[in-house]
Length: 184
Length: 288
Image (cartoon, rainbow over all chains, first blue to last red; front, side):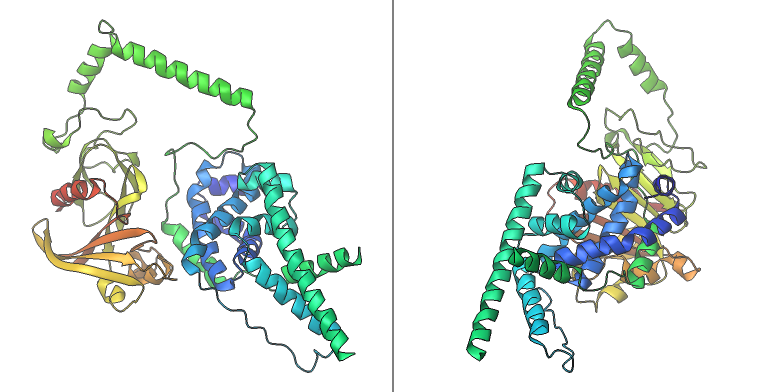
């Protein structure tokens, strides 16, 4: 992130902040969308988070750490807004019927659905670590630092999240194998 | 091993599915809000990374303890020159004629507070000393009296926002282009209660309590953007009526054809004496 841009925004320059928003919003939206699994809710969360970032920018002492600081604010905004929306929006996926005709493609959708279902059952703090590590690509140490948690906690959250997803994936595979066995 | 690779591939495909493109409306709403949202300055300790060396933290703590200790010992020493000096400076301090009655002025005024300004000066930004103030940027020029502890967050042509101690307890006095109740009444996100008649500065007004529904998806500031007076003049000022987790009291007054609202926000179920303190502030308001 451009340090000069952050410093200008921190000193109250609204045009610099607008540029900052344009540069970072897609990444932050991606994080919120993946943690919450609801694009509409993620939009609301991102909006609140960006306004919070603007308000609190003068407190950011190290401009070069803007990204990590912003991730933390977005993740906390997800924590704050998710409990009010316990009725999760259902994900309706339209399958292109004329193209989905191979076993591999059907299995792929089946795998994703299982992963999706398992991920939605995870606590938000485990989802946040998983998304920052696997989607954003932060090393675990950086994830821990960004979220303000000990390294061991980040490692354990990632472990539980991965284990849950792997179980769901393996269950899906077992069902696929069973189905193929019956068809054969 | 194959299973591991298949799991990683499936997880990656699933995780990366979908678009991360931020909707334009979201960005627009943020930039709109930012224009009228003040940044927090000098109100709390800057965010710092947990990588600060322990030795530095310890040194900082020791320095703070030493400063506090020296300060306390100087204040408590009866023969010290600090005591009398402080007394004389208090009595010789600025005392504009508009200073309120002594009952509203606490005995200890924070050192960082700024003394009440003269009538023609702009109300200082940041902590305010106990006293009376008159807006010079916000119109109609409005006078009010506050005890110590209030912070002037911002004063613009169509609003002045004051916090008490923290941003969760705030009072805004704003000029709007229409009655916010006309917007809020049909909106299912707002629970409106206790409408009653009231008076402010001798003018008749209406007082209403708002709570944002716990299931509301509405963004507190966005739908109200057209209510602020400067929006009518081509600006983008907004009036944040109520936020999640807060209860708002809205007083609407017609000041010579101009709709002025006094918006009081505090956390839901707050049991502090904030309401009583705000009542004193509201009763002190005079539109010039």
